[in-house]
Each structure stands twice: as structure tokens, then as C-alpha cells.
Image (cartoon, rainbow, N blue to C red; front, side, top):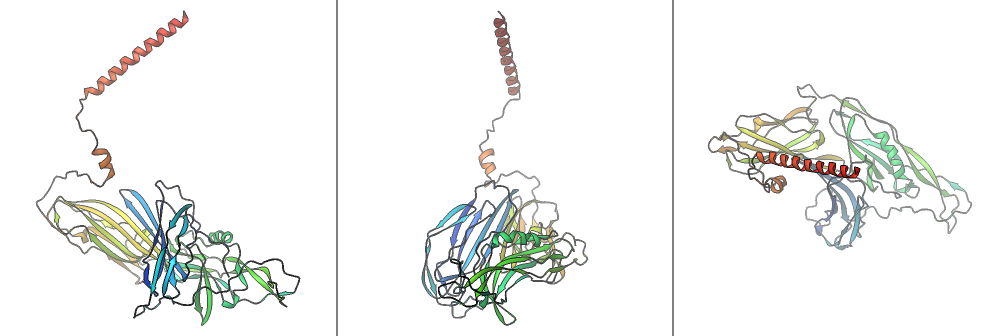
Amino acid sequence: MMPQNGYAQPAPKAPAATEDTQVELELSAPVFPVTEYFTISFRLRGGRLERYSAFPDLEGFKKSGKSSTTTTRIVEGRTTTELIITQRYAAYAEGDYVVKPFTMTVNGQVVRSAGAALKVGPAPTAATPGTPPAGGGLQGLGLLDQLFGKPKPQEYVEPKDNAFLALVPDKASVFVGEGVHIGLYFYLTPTDQGLLDFYNFAGQLPGILRQLRQRTAWEEPFDEQEILPETVTMGGRQFIRFRLYEAEYYPLNTEPLVFPAVALQMVKYRVAKKPAEGLDNRLEGYKTYRTAARSILVKTLPPHPLRDQVPVGSYQLREAIDRTAFRTGQAFTYSFGVEGEGNLAALNAPVLQPQVGLEVYGPDVQQELTRQGGRVGGRKVFQYRFVARRPGALPLDSLLALVYFDPATGRYDTLQPELRPAVRGPVRSAATFRARTDDPFYQNVLFDANSTMQPLEAYRDVSRYANYILLVLLAGAAWGWWRARD
């Protein structure tokens, strides 16, 4: 069984990027043990992903899923986005392999790789649980090809199959703002592989997604483009599962998330009752599979003064500072980084409490979002610049605080800095402007500007001379008109 069409995650058209789009290919280390993955990634900067070609097939390896990481930076009010799509490969066995030169097309732009020579070594002595097996895999599944020619008239029967289409949520109920993972999967048993095939999946998918959309939830779709089989066990029985679509939904209010039953039409072959030698002995037909309707209960958050404003998720604070010695009047950079699982797009900057004798600039914002293994998480960093005018300990915990609700514990919590830099030096009352040397505006405009003082009368003289010239031109025009009459 094999999909006939790859597909790209449908998305609304985005405006054209204002900066040049850049695409780069990256390969992981060429030497690694058989228990680890080899990866091929492409990095997209300066534009939104619209479509990309399939990652190459590597001899001696099987594709083992993909992940995507989105990094968003907001610096001085300017937003830049970087997307990384990574394909993982698992080696069948130890040995030396060659990745031949290949190309990929991303948003119509062709990028090339020179390939690489790989060396797959033995597994470490203490193998990590959950490592992909070296042997076996997804090949040899008896994938179907299209029919060749028309069968001779004969009697066909339709065998019974055990395949089904399922919409699978990972939770039956969530809090407002808490993420719920939704996966649309097609299951079949190994004995069904010769009976079923995908039919115009790229044409059917947009209609399915329109039915799954939730008007009261924020959606984070996964950037999967290829339909790849994976082996799973359900109820002690082995199935081959195809992941058709998956996304994380974050409800915005207490209205339940209702997913109607959706249908998928598949090709199902009937087989000849009396197979004839030299013929395919199959007749193509169609069968429609449907999911069961699903409903996710959405619970309101517990009472709290900031209940309608706090972000929801499981977060940790990662703070950083750019120096170890602090002087009054000198700027330093402090980063308030929030890591974990949740809707980072809804996570706003921490509440800032003003303090006398302290100047605060920013924040610049950087966001990295990773979708992998049915989970969505990442990091969002708020970077501030501080200038202390008075000496003493700087209590950052009283300046910055982020209240959030953790659905895992069902309680509210607060992220507060633990760093308390000690500022030394005299009290500085007057703030002086200092241009940032790394800012292109100051490099290319202000530093090259002419600072010579100009007298105020200079502009009045220019205006007077311009009036003289205008009078001369008018007189010339009048004289020409008078001569023309004669």
C-alpha cells in the first residue's frame, strides 16, 4: 500500500516576504552508532513554508519520522522567522554507506547537497531503551502498483478487510488554553496491504481539514508532508498505521471542541475467484472509511485574579545575563527565558514593575517552537537591557514575574528570577545617550551625517533667491507672449 500523492500542509496564503528567502541543507555527523539517527534538514529563513519536495531515500536506511522547529525573533520591532524541517534515518545495520548528491526544492527554490560518506558503528554497550531496531523496518510491505492492462472477463470477489480510519485525541478533557493533540490515522493489518491503496488523497485532504477546523481554538499543525507507515500494536494485534494529519489545539474558551465524523475514500481491489496465470487477477474498486465523531470537554480555570490573562502550560524559567560585573550607568542584558510545553504564541512578556533609579529597555523577543512525537513545545526568550543609576543589589525578582497555570498540577505558579546582580559605583542622575555600535541606523546614517552648524538666515536667503528666479521666468514668459501677438 502506498500513497499516490504527497501533500503539503494547507495554509492561508501569506503576504510576500519583505526580505530575501534563504534555504540551506544540513547533514548530521557522518560517524554514529547504529542506535542513533542520521538526519537531513533544511533551514528556511525570510519566508513562510508553502511546499517542499520529499527528502531523498537512502540505501541502507529507513525513514523514521520528521520534526520541525520554528524560531521567531523580534528585535527592535522587526520580526524574523526561521524554520527547520528534519528527516530522521535509521540504519538497518552497521557498515559504510554513501549518500549520493541530491537536490530538494523548497518554495520553488532548488538547493543541492554534495552528499556524504557515512560510517555506522556498533551500538554502545548500554543501549538506550526505545532505540529503533537495526533490522526489519518498513520495506518489503508488498506495496501495490497500478494495474497493467485490462483483466480478462472473470468472476471477482471482495475480500473482507480489517482497516479503519480513526481520529485520536490524547485527552478527553482539557482546561481553557491547554493543548490537546489530535491525530487522523488510517490503520490496516499486514494482510490488507494487497487490497488497499490511497486514492486522490491530496484532493480529499483540504475538505477533511475544513471539517476538523475549530473556530474556538488556536491550531498548531505539524509540518508533515509525506505519508509514511509505522507499525503499532493495538489490543495485542499488529497494525500498520499511516499518519494523515496531526495538530495541537488550544481552546480559547469553555466551548467544547467538536470533531464531526470525516470520510476518506480508498481504492480497494477485488480479487479473481479463479486466478489466471499472466493476469493481475485484481479489479479496482472504491471503499469509503469514516471516523467516529469526537468531542473534547473544555474546563474553566480555577478562580484567580488573573484567570483570563495567564498563559497555560508546563513551563520552567531559564535566565541568563551577559556579564558578571555591574557598574552604575552601564547597560547590561538580561534574558528571561520560558521553556516547556504550551501555546507559546499566547505567552506575553512578564509583568514589569518600575523601580526608581533603573532604566529598562525592551524586551526583544525570540521564540523557538518544536513539533515532534505528538508534542508541541519550545522556548520563548524576553531580552531586556537595564541601566542602573544607583549602587546596590538589583532585585530582579521584584521587577519581573510571570504567573501561569500548570494543567499537570491543576495549580497556578509564578516564574521569578533568582539572579540578584550587585551594582557598584557612584549614583548617576543624568542619563546620556549612547548609540549602539551594532545598529545599522547609527552606523549608516547618524555617524555619517554632517554635524556643522548652519545659520538660520541661510534658509531665508534661499527662499529670497528662489523668488527672484521665479519673477525672471514670469517676465520672460510675458515678453514671449507679447512678441507672439505681434
